[in-house]
Amino acid sequence: MCGRYVSTSQPDQIARYFGAEMSEAVVENAPPANYNVAPTAQVFVVVETGEVRRLETARWGLVPSWAKDLSIGAKMINARAETLATKSAFKRAFQRRRCIVPADGFYEWQVIPGQKRKQPMFIHRADGDRFAFAGLWELWRDPAAPDDLPLRTCTIITGEPNEAVSPIHDRMPVMLPPDSWSTWLDHENHDLDMLGRLLVPAPASIIGVHPVSTAVNNVRNRAAWLVDPVGLEADTQQTLL
Image 1 (cartoon, rainbow, N blue to C red):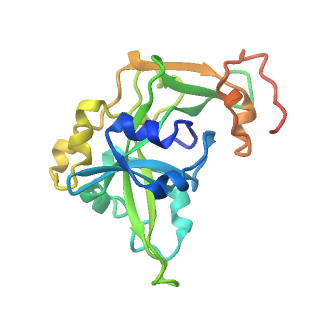
Image 2: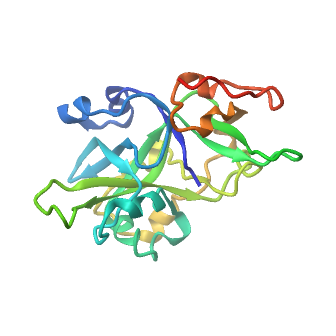
């Protein structure tokens, strides 16, 4: 799964990277740089409607249009690639509302023999570039406030891990290479078999991994030092910022 990730780039940087347009509203309401993004946070997503690719924001944790309230979103932060076409919460979005979730890295927790607590590991691009996580998005209207604007929500798709991540966890986010972005974002593309073939593990060669402080366990810690490497035995809790 992917339950925490890093998003520190400015919206104009992300928009340029993905060749996307960006509204003033996105600039004004952009989520701040965050080295510990947690579920239900507002995050950046790249979407495509018509022939226009846009940078938008969404609440992390997909809320299907039929949901009675937002609470289901906390359970929908990830969607398994293997069941997108069949699971009721995701199949409509898989057909028409696919997105990219930009990320500068993510965390997973590894079991260390002889230790009770798990060791957080920071997983990033070895070349310092950013990830393009495959995602889905939905619009949800609050049944109790039908006149309010709809809320955009999103989920990150996970699949089998590559050789770099498999010692840490049995799932990892699907990372889309640039040559698949247009195909994935094309909302008029309903070839689910072909789209499913894009959801494969990224090459292990692009991945860098190192242990980080257990301070990342606390969602209130969001600062840059969270991604600093630590020794497995020297790790100590750092002061809460």
